[in-house]
Length: 254
Image (cartoon, rainbow, N blue to C red):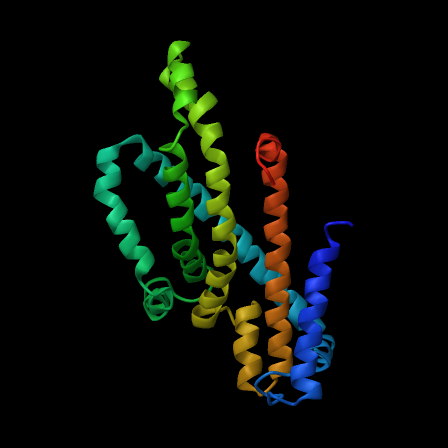
C-alpha cells in the first residue's frame, strides 16, 4: 500500500471525529470549535486574504529556520570542539531555552519595533537550541571503531572531521532539525501575535484579527493552513535527509 495512504487516512479520521463532536453530538459551541464545514466556508470567503498570510508566514518560517539552523550548527560545532567551552556555555543555553518565549514579546517590540526583526528573533530563540544540542551530541558521540580506524590510517584532524565525525553526526543533526522546524512555525506565529505587520499580516496576525471580530471559522482555517504548511516543510526536510544520507536507511532496521 502506498505510504501516503496512511497520513490521508489519519487526516480523514481526525476530520470525521471533529465533525461528530461539533455537528452530530454538539459537544462544542461553534464559536469555541467551529465544525469542519464552517472552517471550509470561512476559508473560501476570505481565501485571498488567508493565502497571502500563508505566504508571509511560510517565508518567515523558512528564513528563520534556515538562519537559526546555520547559527545553531556553528554554535554546536564550536562547543563540540572544546570540552571547556561546552562546560562553560551549555548551562547558559539550557537557561535561555527554559525561559517562556512568549515573555520576550513585549520586550522585542520595545527593542526591535514591529515587523520582521522581532518575528525572526522569536523564531531564532524558539528553534536554535535543538540544533545546537543535536550537533554537539552527534559530533561528540563518534563511534569508537570509526575513530580508531581513522587514526590507524594516520588521518589528519581535518580529514577526521570531514570523513568520519561529520558524516557520523549528520543523522543526529537532522533529528535536531526535524525538532526545530515545527518550533520555527510556532515562533513565527508567536512573533506575529506580538509584533505582526498590519500592512502584510501573516497567519498569526490574521488569527488575532479574526478572533477579535468573532470570525472563529476563519481563524481556524488559518490554524489548519499553519499545520498544513508545516507538514509540507517537514516532509521536504525528511526528503532532503534521505537524499543526503542514503546509508542511514540502508544500515537501520526501519
